[in-house]
Every structure is written in structure tokens, then in C-alpha cells.
Amino acid sequence: MRVFKHCSALLLSLPDFTPALLLLALSCPFWEVSHSKPVTSKGRMDDSCVFYARALLENITDALTQARLFSGINCTRQNMELNLESRTPTVCSPQGSTCSGITTSAFDQDSCLTDIGKDLSHYYKFLSAQPDPDNLIGSSVLYSLRELMENCFRSSLPADFISKEALVERSVTFNERLSLCKVMKGFHVRTVTINRAIGYMNLGEHAS
Image (cartoon, rainbow, N blue to C red; front, side, top):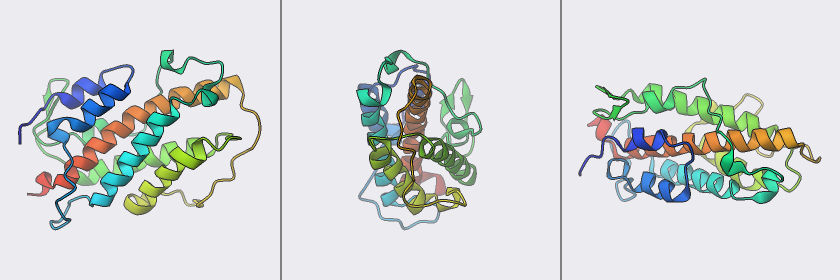
């Protein structure tokens, strides 16, 4: 399989991740996901986790197009806010990949899974606290985020996790819509990274 080692660094450097670039990211040969290989070797991510991660990414991508979520705001012009409490893009770089001129000598799966869990927990807590009067977040992004956490990253679930969030049903302020836009854009980019990492672990090359 041809290795495209610079795909990750290139895509993560882009300020605004469009659907076309999303397709490029998920079709990049190095991060290609195989659904046909069973979970047979130690350390390989289950195929179902690939499915849940892709479903989350698709729902975030769709949510960013929902004008009702960001009424009065041109979300495409806003900066993204990333979770700075994790190092997922760094610790999940596959062995032999190059990012910012630095080649990863080894892949640490435990560190990668830990930081992905930190990201999922961070965004779950933020999104579950947002007012969602039209259930646009709860029925799509939060639902698929719960599915991924419950089935693949259960240790990242908050201690007070419940299956259905009681989101405040009230009107959303301008600042809340602006914050949601920026955080969702950051979550989108981070979820692309998570999808590529899960795809890499699904292939099992790091465990061979």
C-alpha cells in the first residue's frame, strides 16, 4: 500500500476543513480503512469503532451546515477552538509519519487512545451543557458521540454520564452560538484526526 506520509500534517494545517477536504482526508491511502479485515490481532481497533467514528464525523459536518444553530453568525468565517488539554495529533501520528519536519519513530497506542478519550470527554461535557431547544445537537452529534464513547472509549465517559442529556430548553444567546460555532469547528478537525487514528489502528500495522 502506497504511503502518503504528509497527508496528516497538510490537512491539520488548514484553517477551514471543507467537505471536499474531508473526503480527501478519509480517502488518503495512508489512512485508508479496511472493513473486510476481522479483529484478529492484539491491539487492532474493532471495525465497529471505525463505523462509530465516521458517523460522528458525518454528523458534525452536517451540524456545521445548520443555519439555525448559528443564527446571525457566519460560522465559516470564524476561527476554530481546539481542545488544548490533549495531544491527539501528536501522539496518534503513525509510525514513520512526518509532521512539521519530525518523523515519528514509534506508535504508542495507549497514549493515542488516552488522548482520544480526553478529547471525546471534553467535547461531550461542552456539548451536553449547551442549550438545544430544537434538539439539533442532541439528536445527531451528541447521539453519535455517545455511541462512540460507550462502545469504544468507555473509560472516557464522565462519572455522571446518562444516556439522555436534559439540555436546557431556552433561547440561545449570540455569544453561546458564537462559542458553539468555534468549538464545533475545532471538534470537526479533531474528529478527522481521530478517524484517521482509528483507521490506522483498525488496520493493525502498528501491532505487526
